[in-house]
Length: 460
Image (cartoon, rainbow, N blue to C red; front, side):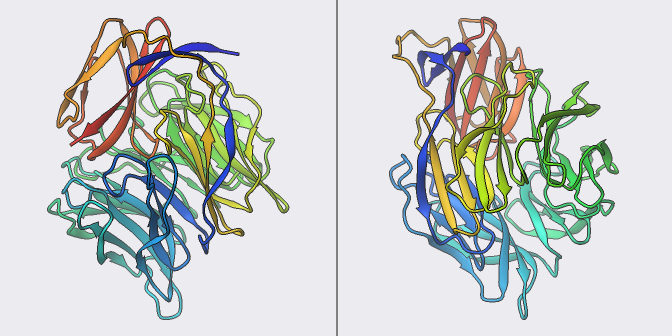
């Protein structure tokens, strides 16, 4: 068992690392359809609320006390003939709060579309749907991201049935979007995709997959106002890939790629060997769980490296599991059970629900229509109240965040409020936050002597 020193908000702890999770805490039993959830601070009170794409609606649940007590379902938009597929958050109009981005599939008289709802008051009071694209086909990935490096949030979408990846430019930074610009039509059933700076050049590349074509791919953003490369294959060694993610699995400062695939029950990762998007062969994490549909990556045991979250579906038995990154270089444990009190998990994510500076787990499941969370109970010994090694200023920050430290810094990682890694750097003492979205971030600092500290900062 590993032992480290970790500081959370200025206090140093000696940690006996062994992530454990508490019993299921049900948030809602009315998540109909194929529920998809996102954690985000919708009402600007610095805790994690929950967004839901349900059967016919987009809704949110307020974290009423900042500790994981959630209020009733609040409808943002609802339709009669249109099924909600996906939901995401981004500050689309540049006013400092999180708006809602979503996609719908039309049935009967409905319209298949991508829309957004403005957060009118910054507290979760939303305006009506505003169309971005209509008559689209099965959009199962929709993201707010600055594609063209002009410091506003554009919209990326993937139309599964057409194999089409495209984007819409935010023309004025206020949420007025241009027509669809095609990036690629070369993939066969690309269901999910993510954005990450794969080649470490400061822009947002795309990682996706071909479900019917059995491959994991990425597309390079050339940084020229939304111009992308053709599809670059990472691996063909998958059978029905369903999910992809990008994170620094081997702690070398660049972003690797992780995938799950259904027909071979594989969870695997691919090393970014040169930090510029050249990938090594598939490295297997597990084939022990059946039907690993979901994938999320986060440091669940507070030891400074990236662990894996997934789910299993074996007949009528469903479970949520995690895999510990044993040495920080990508050697993983066998699956560790978090909960089996679910019926077909549709979303698994990790975020800090109760503001205790570790990552809890959130799930949504289809056949029981349930949203639930699981408290991270990773044991911390009594703090010795030593002084912090580092401080960060200014906080809140607009542009450059300075890190002042009495110990030599080896690296740091920046996570957004949904728990996703947004930046990883070696031997730096400044962070340029100019292109960060407004909101809450967690910065994890690793020192040369192996100790860790974590700080929360607010980006204005």
